[in-house]
Length: 91
Image 1: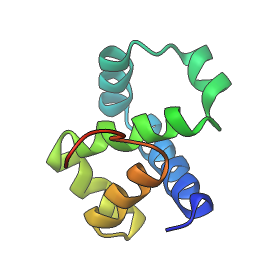
Image 2: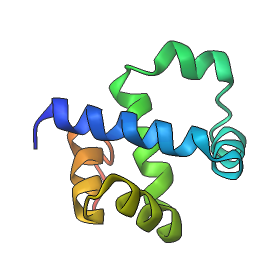
Image 3: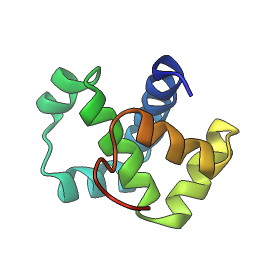
């Protein structure tokens, strides 16, 4: 998987998360990330990985995003890893 593909998928995840009020509010509450921080970090790989990790942490959200993006959940996990997610962790 290329970094460019992973970043593009994570940006689609951002659109998905922030277009849904409940998802957006839960992401902000769990991450402690404010709106200004989101705007400032939208191109940061670590931030993008956090969006994918947020979706992967709740299977219904992961499956909904996978359907939205027309990708397999495994592809989302690979993108997360490509962006540096899970470094030093076994999944």
